[in-house]
Image (cartoon, rainbow over all chains, first blue to last red; front, side, top):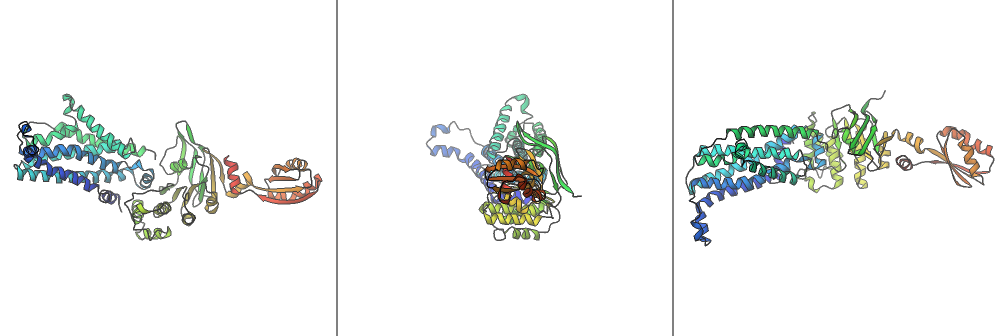
Length: 247
Length: 294
């Protein structure tokens, strides 16, 4: 039994992998369906007058619907799964068991990697379902744009997971870590409303896939660079703080 | 010259204004079983945390002459979706010292957990968790084993198994365990340290503790004149104290049993009051503990 297997079992036996997969897959199915049938749904609900206010939906909306939900409910699920893995000091006795046998780096590396892998896998399954669904129901989109856009989404998930780890180095309680992390992510998104700093914020990555599949004009290299640096710095601070923390 | 494997030099630990440990000089011999005793809040858990590297001292220094140190908290807990065998095997793997996989079964058997080994930890009783924690620590073959109240809140059978496991470690590892169960300490420990409100008020053998703080004594029963006898006895260098329990009865605490055996009857004869009986008494460890920690 290694720490890597421990983390695999944490995801498997607690069925957290299933929660992630279910959430992203559900939105992967709903995205293209909503884009294709929203006018029909509204009409069947008796909202004939409202149909006129619905903009004409395109194939890109199939993906956008998925991404919109994934960035909210999906992200929330990822943060909670990450908090449950990374806030290992929340239980002092379990923490002592691990801390007296392995270094902090040895303990948290599998936790970061397995959580990120599970989140990436769940997102990928969701986007594949959304992409295929969109292609069947509406129109096949540029695969390259979807792939590159998805890499940006995954990078944002890594930022969220690293932030969860950082918050866990300040507070120990799992729900507290998750809620504070979500709060910080929302605050950062609000900071993104300031044009001068927006380009450097990881939250800019969230709009990348939408811009790519719609062929829009965008420039994300600053947000990508900043995100990579931020992840590295947050992980380093987390390790340093956890090494100094008393249990 | 006995090797000292654990020592602290004037180590102190404060939590804000609260002094958990105050300039403690601990010294634990290699291969011994050392009992750290004291009432709740005396600083035992803090001391184990410092020795295990889980906490840092506010001042002073801690020396543990090995990197192979295991700490067992008073209520061990594990991810409840792991089996007992997986917990022990994880511990063995993390130790990374070449311990064969077969050692997992061996320690599970010693801990009386063979039948429960493949069950999820979620269904374990507190006693089973305690034994599992000990098994997970022992499988790493630690040089130093730090146990925090390992038998507290266990039923007699669970307590017996834990004490047997500790006794088996004697000579193979240096074991330091905190406890306020004096019978346990008396049964398995070579040396003890007594903490009182963060201060180490005694360190040494159990016998030495009883001699120094409680020790031997005698009860003298006479027709009358207890006050005069008590006063006369206090003049003797081997008398630590006297207590007049009635006009007929005096309790005498002594520092030197040999001297008392030679001199007591002679002194009583000198005083001249008719003596009915002289009987030896021995303070219990509990009496001494209460005396030292009050």
